[in-house]
Image (cartoon, rainbow, N blue to C red; front, side):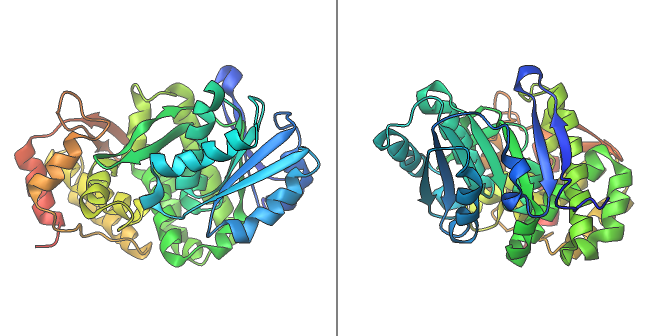
Length: 368
């Protein structure tokens, strides 16, 4: 049976005891009745979406939820990382409160990572916790941000600094929604897929290299495997370390440099995946300078990023600006910057590095 047969979505389980849940992956899931069966019971549902995704997919989601909920409300947020703020989050609470939503109300996050993060955080906070379901419509959200229960909003002084760990009841990845993604968003998602190779699975990295053109062309079967394998790796990591006390931090490969790029340029100037892709190149260079990997792997990763349409040269923010933003990163400890480094192909660890060495990498990898 085809992986994309509409009667048989791929299922990946997140094993977290009583908080376990399935990730469903397949084409046409928005209109597939079985994808929506067995969800938390309530009289009311709230769809949280944005003004880009809402017009495309909210009517289909409304239709899918109609047999299960007597009332379905919708809030449409402005699109983009610049709106991932407390002020935007309050729009969700405004609807929940004005409509008299109770603690059984189910929230549905229809959109990319920003919508998913904010909906999850709203669900974690409203009446101290209501159920929510992730319906990610971007590649980045399907392979990373919708899985694992990280929720947050940004603060002017740092990305994702205000949030909670709060697991969804289900993740529904409709691969058909990827066909409407802008090319730039597609590339941004590929960054988070590529990430899993050097930190966890070099065989997967080989596969990505062999199939990058098909991924860029949005071949459904190829996308199905990429999303499935990415979710399997993330499920394995999250199942061992839900709250990022150890192993889960490796999923932040490229993110220390990447978050500094996002914060330094202003949130939304570069897409998150673009910053992470460039950050992975920088983290690979740092891994090489520390003697963990050879230059060939750095060059291999860089070449793959280029093929995926991602930037590999960072913005010239200045070494001190990079270091400043990295010191307020969530992984920093007592002001010491922590990096996810490849300590051998397919394996990663978190450690510090001398500022002078980090500065050399920044100067090497950023525009003069």
